[in-house]
Length: 94
Length: 477
Image 1 (cartoon, each protein chain N blue to C red):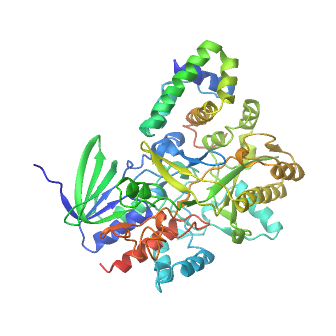
Image 2 (image 1 turned 30 degrees about the horizontal axis):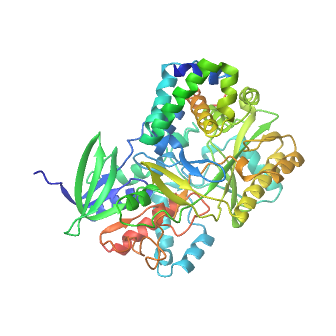
Image 3 (image 1 turned 90 degrees about the vertical axis):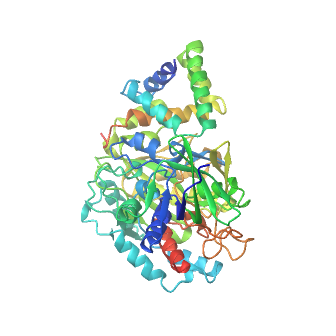
């Protein structure tokens, strides 16, 4: 379910790698390396974001997640993590 | 009933402070157990994987203040020396003078301080000879040339490195092991040290006998060890957290100091090879006395993407199509703000706020770096701003934007934290005494960046090692 939200990020930013097992594993690694309370918050956010995408569609959900206080902090964090996961294998520019 | 094993000395944390202390104790014939919360360095990890694996909270310990800022702190065997830029500066003379005045009789007044710095630099193979890893990349050369043209002081950076292959991946852990890390220099040669990685200390208890019981989690199992000498070297935030959590000091963490890095991405007309050569070969020190330093930053697609992640998606796509022409540059400031380290349900956080002077310092730093980059013939820069006009095509535009910056719009990152358990002459002015022993607790010491009297204004690796060396000398073991 969360892949719908993650796909929305990759397509919005034109990232080349599809959301695959490697990206999901990296996202899990990031989540797991946090404390219990942050892990819980991130998991709840990912479920909420995915449900929002399914219910409101791409455009409205992006607007909500990127503008609403608190939600936008999580949204920006996940964008950064997805971007980094997208370029994980790169050791150089270009 | 099974009793906990007893050892002469336990060291918690394996960064520069912990590794050096463990090494010196072992050399002095002591039985040493070293507990490190993080795993051993995974050299095969990609950039993102390395960042998520080798840092506390995946690299984003939250710093709650006028803007939310990540604090990057190592959680890996070798500590910060595994994930820093291998910069190895002696303690700035101005800072040393401040500390001598602040804490008379401390290690900073030691007659052997300079000699210790020199010996350690030699042990860590520190060199400013950039011939060994090329002349730096084009982005660094552009910065140096522009600074020289403005007659600004620019210096070659001393680094603890051997056989660098210019992969530019220092911050996630050198994949070829070129960095002279604390693990490599201080831990490998001493098989006598019982090194236990992935062993996170949860609490410390003082026993009736005066010894210390250390409880730690290793592979999802709770274990214990008892020792008469416990040296905590868990790093900028975790040493103070451990003291507070164990009810050994209420005030630990209440005087946290740090540096802030602001990044500007600059676009040039031609290819600048920012990915080639190693980072930080040059540092502009013209404004060091005003607490500002300018330098290039790590550059791979991963770092670039994370530095551009606040941009509008269309801008992001456009810049990522031109990566060859981009460079990432940093202004590091030494703010005078006091911050506090805390922990909520096991999550470390830092709370902080600006004072008027430090906010002006940030703005001035950005303005000077923008001036330098346009002098280096940048055609466009991206300022570290969450909102508003983050792009500037000339200096006038950049200065106009910087002038109108509001504190909450800035984007910064901190990777240097200090002074959370600072040294002091009494329990009112410090958490540890001049021997780094926690006030009121015999046999319990803290030796890492958290005992430094204030922030250093430079990468603190060299200062931590010299401080640890001189502290050990004072112990007379």
